[in-house]
Length: 249
Image (cartoon, rainbow, N blue to C red; front, side, top):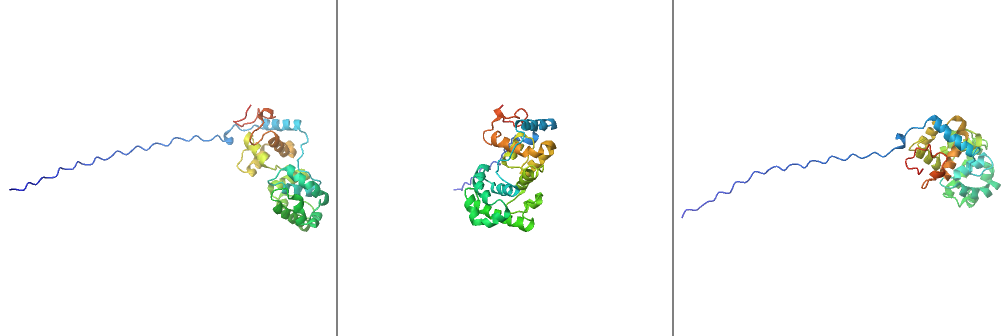
């Protein structure tokens, strides 16, 4: 009997699958940048500081001191600390150590006892003793009057130098702390990613006649009105000029 051989059924040719169409990425809305807001006109900046001046003609820094040296020490101690906390510690300290030589005579260990309520007090005590020694050896026991020389002292940076130059020697400097940095950016008057950018931006736009007290007005405005979490827009002197898109008035 003949063997029956069955031919295998021909395979269907594979139909190539259609490639799924890649979804085009949705455009991401750019965050609104303060640099994109309407720039401040010179007349508006002048108006801001005229209002500050009228409300507080002679603003004062809140760090207590009796001379340029104690101001320098107070500013160095104020890093990452409140002015009130520094004042509480330095009132007794400055009664017995208000010069570099007296501070050296006090010594680092006893100095720590006076400032132990301040954050980072061990490092700060070391810096205060070191800067006192440097003032005596390099500057005749006097606080120098240039930014570069002040910045050469242990524990002193650009902000410290600007505060001392302004408050002790009447220089038109702009010390940018956390309050000034916030106000410069939030209002759009001098936006910047770093304190130096904000400092230079403010110096560029603020009229010279206001520069002696400008950083104090901005600090006080940031500390008591333009608060970090809940700004008090309803009592703000400059709420009609402020560029902040989230202001509440």
